[in-house]
Length: 415
Ligand code: LLP
Image 1: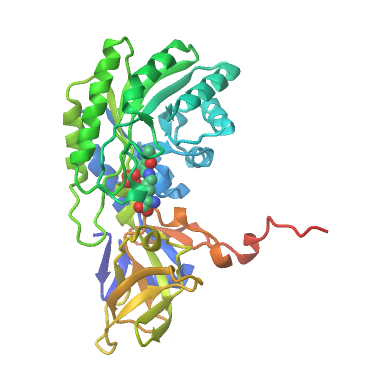
Image 2: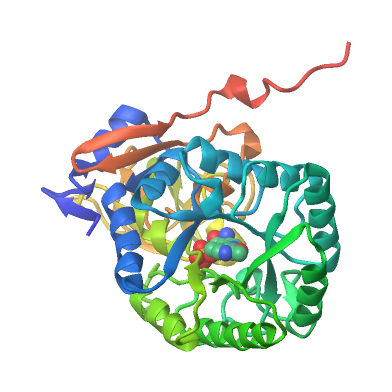
């Protein structure tokens, strides 16, 4: 396990979290390199012998050190903005192994992606098809494209992260896809390379994921019969992880399910996982400021807040809370809400947890490697947390804490 107690202290790999807090301060995100590599390895193993690739979904955690690690392991990338592409390139990732998804790509972003030699633009609407073609024409290039198809499959996950149903904004309707492919095939400046889908995030069961792959496969065959040959099938991301007591099917089960649903087709199969690679590789380390006992509830007021990690209030997400020091017998347990200093009742990291900790103690908010730092903000003029990547006993600061002056450095007062 990446995060375990050694001599009574919670460690990231072999690095004690209390040392990390002393060195780098709190709040602080701490990631385990070994856990990221081993999750990536699970994909590689399940894909061995197949023409298949992992394109890590950058939005889950876009720290350059993590992107560089994954690039070195051979990953491609799934991005949703020009900013994410700039990160991939800065981290040493290859544009040619990168897919660009998202419903609202701007002209500048499409131009940037094509100029850098993006591997594929996942087009999500008819007007976007026109825009990409026009920009390619202007640049005198052919744009490699896929259509992101909405397979209309219920991912059975939280409505905010469910994306494969007809009523969501994502992708083109399954029934329209063939017609759009035919239109795209008429445009010389478009080079049709693939097809993609993503039905939602945090899937514990592989069945809807496999069903979506099957629907894509059927469409690929119809296109083939119509003379439109594709090179890849992108089955998306969305593989769940354990936050509490869920028992998600393994990465291997998802991958093998999709591969067997696609059978002997010749196309390369692409997976774009985010959470399943980094989610359980990170914790948010925070210090208790006050233990506030109340009439109706007790609060553990900590120095991390909803601006650092917003998943609990936004998705009713559950993150395990652990004390960094294994509880000493002298500290009494009680039930607490773990809350931050932000002025909102929605500012909580966890509710109703049995904990034994005192002022000054450290807590670790677990499973915070995905959609943690990337969704952070400066609300209440709070500088963003530091990020540390642990490799064995070594801890590397991979993003320093922001300074308060940086928060208003871009602002001016009119004369
Ligand atoms: N591919 C596409 C096109 C996506 O939209 C997403 C995630 C992924 C791949 C990666 O999905 P994953 O493997 O990480 O589940 N902020 C939410 C999750 C939003 C997911 C958005 N799309 C959360 O904290 O749960």
